Amino acid sequence: MADVSAARTKAVFEFKSATLPLIAVILKTSDLDVLAPVLADPSAPPALRVQQTSGMVMAKGVEDQSFYRWSRLTSLNEVGADPATFAVSPAAFHAAMVERQRDWPTAMTTLSTHDTKRSEDVRARLTVLAEMPGLWRNALTRLLDLAPVPDPGFGSLLWQAALGARPIGRERLHAYAEKAMREAGDHTGWLSPDQAYESAVHAAVDASYDDPAVGAVLDGLLDVVLEPGRSNALAAKLVALTMPGVPDVYQGTELWDLSLVDPDNRRPVDFDLRRRVLAGDDADGAAKLRVVRQALTLRRDRPELFMSYTPVPAEGPAADHVLAFDRGGAVTVVTRLPVGLSARGGWGDTLLRLPDGPTAVADVLAGGPVALLVRP
Image 1 (cartoon, helix red, strand yellow):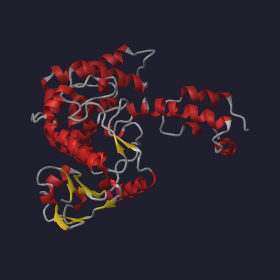
Image 2 (tube, rainbow, N blue to C red):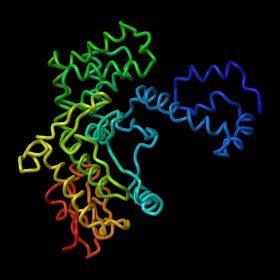
Image 3 (tube, rainbow, N blue to C red):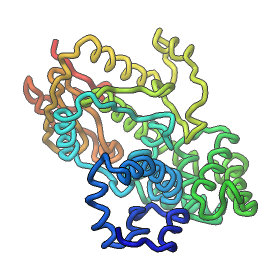
Image 4 (tube, one colour):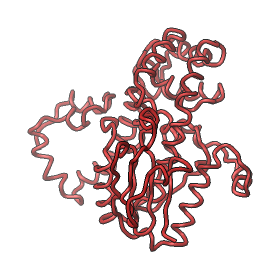
């Protein structure tokens, strides 16, 4: 095997940016040519060792470090995700689901786990910012002026977290800020904290509670993104529960869940509240619990309705704002890009080509941003 110099071997322990594959940092092209056939044998000792370590390298180098440095749109910075993939079209989504139904029909589907960096509803809210980048740019500029952070890039990540989880208690946001800046590891760290840097970040956190001007910026943003964020959240939840695969609902996410990275996403769940909502209490988040309950009940009672996958096409002026598919008798219909839909004045004459014939999307979604249809 080609020689690997001590300097390049040492780079394994010093590597901090996951924007390039780790192996490309420490090996030359000629080394890769030698390694490729060895690693292609899954039973070979070198391949076994790579299998034993690559997951940890990925977790610590990417999810637990680079994801705290890359703050363009933090709803993309999720475990198993690639922030370079900004979005997919409905056509690409349908193609992926056809493949999933064919090859992995019993694989798990979920939106939140014990290791989620931002809960599903935080991400759904932050994704709204992608539809209004000018608003976010102006608000972020104002926040960085009012409560300066030494690293503006980290400031973007911090203020997205504050918006995504708002209202969030002071101590929870301080705990998140500490973990995020130390995991990023570029200005401070767990082993050698930079007190000046961390104090400046914590001062910005305090400003979101103590400075009325900072609070006003965040509250103004929240007023704009709240309802579109809930539309995104309901859409993501219904898709996850009805797409090919076995759905998993992480504890607490039956209602709105505005949690950040662990241990924040492992707080005790108020199951008594969920029982009251199921019994009819119209608490905040009841709409989400109804979606969860109805979708899971239908999958349990009528599994024959979920045995295939067929895209349901839309046509008309707002066709890009609807995603629909037929699982074999159960048809999922959800709203996408709700800000743009509102800006263009709603559904208009947009139609869905349902199995029983063309149907107005405005009629299907008259009661909310999502629908699960079943033939009588």
